[in-house]
Length: 472
Image (tube, rainbow, N blue to C red):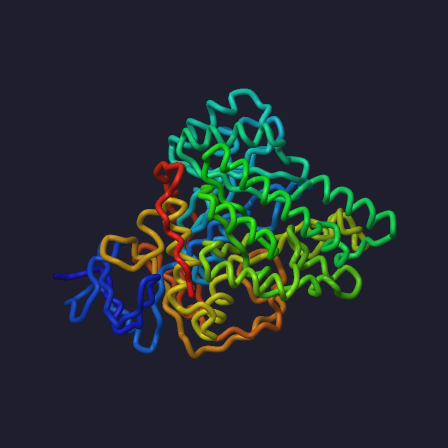
């Protein structure tokens, strides 16, 4: 039997184990795994390399207008190029509703953008920014039925929803079979902290950390868990940053609440001290919630080990450090006038590989689970996130001995700086394969804009199958 591709002699890591094997690919899918599989049109020698599933990054802002009215730096073309260079083959970004806009119009707009530019497979979270627009419920139900199976709501910014609106969305999502993702911070606590800091003349990027107190996250996370529990509607708590918020999620799950949660590399590897740079330089690392403390880092790793947090996403939110992005309100802008977010699509996989595979924190199988298998399962990417016959041949080949120190501007997005400048990682993606086709090889990008496919997703129940497990 002849295959399209055989990858020979690699060390395969999945969420359930490790083994040496050849992988055969036909028509974009894994056809066989084993030894002496026969002939193929193309053969890749993976001797000495590690093979993992392609990364699934379920939280990225691409070609999206921010709450401040800024278009972020990346198009679907540049963002998915960056993703491929870092070993990510599937992404979920956002279809962001503007105030007064029908949700169906927002979804169509972002679908058209992705169709033009995306070079990897993708889906969307539907952002509900205005629950008062006509036809919201009808649009939402129709879009969910069409395969958009995740939504996003906020409890802060100028698009935050009130409790009654949130409950309405949760009930619709539960009935229609969708997962509701939540940016959970208490807006009133943030506003009070911000006003106090500004009145004291504290306007620097480091003051951004104090302007979003941990209590704002803790309160909102606890409240969202209770609302989800009351509505019996599954929710995903985005970008958990604190010890106490992780504890609230653990308690909610112990009660049987349909709650899942993620964290991000910047909370696992950075602390708020990174914002304390000369002048406005710290703006490069401003994000919301802000980075916290080493104690919180340890607690988040522990929560990942216990299965209280199930995913690690990048929360890629790219803004250039110039007048088009971070400095749009001037080089001396106070922290509330600086765009929040930083690039992460290309960084997530190498950072986590270094920590988990090379340094052994939670282990190689957990690396695959947290960055590929579990996000694919939870968000309904049926053929992604695993290495098994019948799955899409989305694969990453890693050189486990290669050591790379990040430079000032060596990413392949459109941001212009690397927030991990000076960080050294061990283990490096040397080939990225999407549905059997190499889209990155040895640092050369081979993808093509518009070749990424939209992934329709099936309905989820009110209690999705337990996919979490503990990574001890």
